[in-house]
Figure 1 (cartoon, one colour):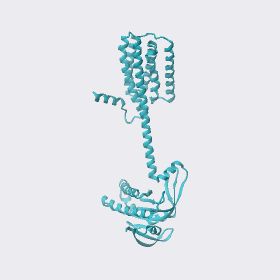
Figure 2 (cartoon, rainbow, N blue to C red):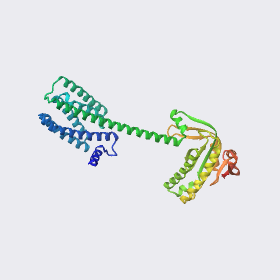
Figure 3 (cartoon, helix red, strand yellow):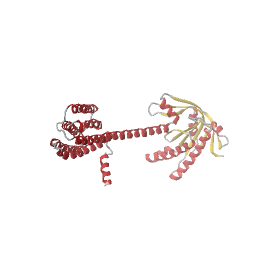
Figure 4 (cartoon, rainbow, N blue to C red):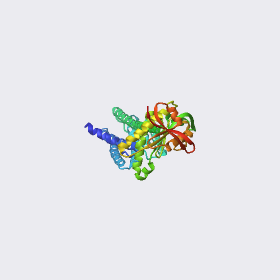
Length: 406
């Protein structure tokens, strides 16, 4: 029995998943309202016959049928027709009951329900809703004034008037609670959705730039440009990517990049560094900003070694040969956010250019660092000199390979 009641109540609250939220609120509220209309009108029919009020008995019998028909119309997509009919019926029933039984019976309270339920109606323009609410409010006040000044047409015993007042007052309170809970639930859902979207936007913003910079950007969306005196920059590039592109499907190519770069992202997170961007098959990381750190060069060298090991591990698991080429340089940079749409956090300066050249003139499967980075690594890493290499725009530059840790 309880299970059947639970399923029935669930049916009243159920709305199709693809239904818009405003229509969903109207759909559930209307089903409850029409069902209560059938129940209440149906119950008072025999009661009015007992009280010898045949006019009200017959009218409520008709109202029971009208409420049931409106229920059916609503379920069959005729929400507007059902709403107009039930509003007219409610107005007539409220006036008729108040005129016959007096203000003390509490029937005039149902004008409040018309005003309270109208905002739930999704298909009505705001001006029409306001007009209906205004009319119902005027009707409420008018019935109060009428009931105070004019005696009931068909007075009934006082205990019956009290009973009607209790039943009608309780029903209206329950309906008010239903509407309040409907809006309360809607507000909670909206707030939860907004909170979820806010968290998603925060996570997305922090994924594309350092959290500190993102917070500054939210507080003041003006130009952000910072000078950092000591950072280390890494560029990594997949060797033979052009040939891979020609011989692989787009899905395979993107899947491979996503897998490899996701592994790199995890390594960057472990070292507490900042990934700047990926461009095609190139991967760029910086150490030493937005917060300065003395070990920016060693931290980057550790990351580079881990990236080589991770690439080898991926090659074994995926059964496809894959190598990367890594270049590292240290120095000063300017960091900032550019653009108004699809803005990006980026780095500029000669240090960036040299790091890119270290990668571009590097060797597959090896980590090439500039003399500036080599000086900062000290004895914690195993290195070997490569000698001087010609770097475009810089001439001859000394370079070193990092092969491991001591």
